[in-house]
Image (cartoon, rainbow, N blue to C red; front, side, top):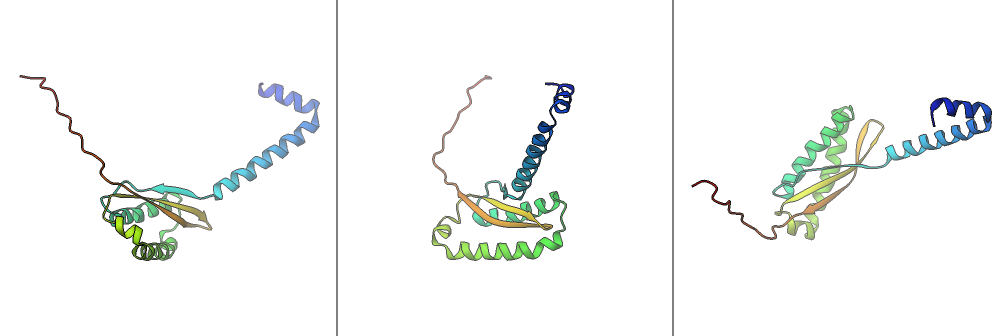
Length: 141
């Protein structure tokens, strides 16, 4: 359907215009709700959990920069969050058992009132399963 056909149809049936307005308003509300939902960023796999935590800091402040927010306003929030996270890591025996394994962290966050608010962190640990060697064929003699 072309734009001209749509305009003609709306002129012929004004009640459709009200319905279109309702649909557009509902879509705008849904968009706003989705924007408020948590977003996430992940680190690359790091050799240890400690290295992943260091990378997480860099990623957090890259999000602050990308959102065009002030780092100084987000620093206290980051310090508070990362302190509680590290305390949790140090007190959790299951996490401590794997802390020397390669790990990747996923930070879930929301942007509220000019701040990047961390909501949770997902820790993924990796372990070597098997090594397989490929020997290149002798192509040149």
